[in-house]
Length: 133
Image (cartoon, rainbow, N blue to C red; front, side):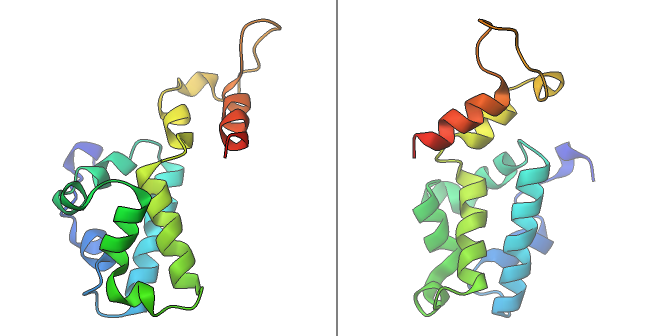
């Protein structure tokens, strides 16, 4: 499916992340898919950010966790489900700006090592961003 045809109403992922999904297993599969898509395809997270449910609830990690987790989130015990719920929400919201560093970089510069005095490489900028946590 071409990028322009993707929408937040795509039934196979969007519907499965909400608490009304049939099972926790279905949600877990959807969370894992979101992590895979968001980490392999920089910029795709914006499809999720344009969803009316996320726009109404807010785009912070906490807002997305509340939206997708619902009452099931309060009853988990640090499970794989909880881990991937928070991981998927982090991939979508990008509060730490890691995705933005990659999204705003030219593809040919991802492996580029600049000469002395030319500034930081993308990898170095990612490391600097993670050190500020």
